[in-house]
Amino acid sequence: MIPPSNPHKTVHLGEFPLEVTLPCLRHRVAANIHQLLKFIASYLPDLHGVLAFASVSRAFHAAVHGDHFVFRTLFLRSYEPPRAGLSGYDFTAAFQARTKLLHGRLEQPEADEVSRDILLDASPYRRSALAQPSSTNLSYLLCLLTPHSAELQLLLAPGLFDLAKIDVETMRMLKGRVHSALALRVFLCKNYKPEMKLLKWLWYVYALFAGHLDPARRQGTFYQAGLLLQQERPGFWQGRLQSAPGSPPPPLPSRWLAAYTYLVFPPGPEPGEFPEDVEESGDNFLGEFRLEETSLGVLEGQGKDYRSFTIRKGRLESLPEDSIGAKVPGWRKIRFIKEYGSHGWKYEGVLLPGGAVALGMWWDALVPRDRAEQGRYGVFMMWAIDEGCEELGRRDTRLAIR
Image (cartoon, rainbow, N blue to C red):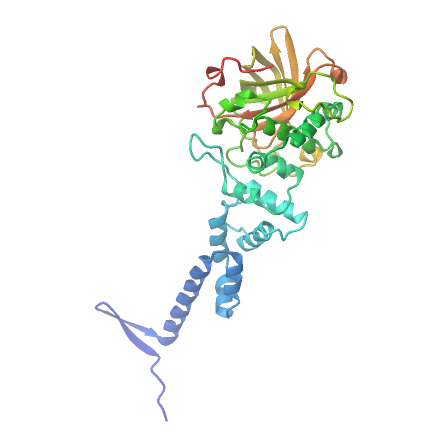
């Protein structure tokens, strides 16, 4: 008869003997192997490699799917931390869904839901004083194969226009659409409704000015665009967007640049055809100004384009997402009067979530609201710049060109 093996073993740690049992040693070795497999899996380059690793054996599968360690590591290596916090977050489901999105394997509306989740986790910041705000999450969204919704396309516009130039034909179409009485009626409506497709009109306005402000355009309307530095062009917000309706919006920036344009001939009631030489079909201005929120939702300011002006009767109002067909919170209506001494112009538009860009229309302050299309009107875009930027008026004494 073979005597049973001794289940006890003495291990020396330096000069100190330690008696352990063989089952204890086996457990410790197995635990160490489990941890080693988890670390190996967490350094694999992509989801495909991780899933292939997990299919090797039960031990490998347990290392990958036993907890969130592997997917948590992969997630935080690829994306910004989730706004909900690390505790209790389902890193496995989130990473798998985002990987499917990046490879174009998600259908609507799930694709938009995952995209919004990435967007709301984003926290853009300036990596240097001379750079635009940027973000890892936004970079991923800009590379998506899945088409964006109108809302996401508008919020990602500062990055999208770096990737695609706008040709002259598209510019002519855009100018025709945004200078129509139909567009004016949409922007002047006191109570927006989803069927008005306000986000579509905002996209048209942004695209028009993005084309005009492109310094590579030889026929650019705003010759001063060549004076703008990279950090002074329209860009992303800084910090996180509002994560839920009712949460406090970010403070309104104080320094702004603005571009606005109109046609010198009366447009028709609907989007129509315009002259071939669309670049010379209207007056166009570039200006700079300061805004101050003197009390909750009340704005005042002053600035300069071809003349000095004062901003008065300014208001900021929250805009319910369901009224414009949006899902991201933080949309606000902005309106004010820009006054040159005895005469002024009314401005009304939408401040995008993040508070860095506003788009809308303006019209003659002397013309009643219900007859605004009978007077002179046009579109505008305003965007926040850093407090340390040099005043544009010091580079060129004529801020505006007629």
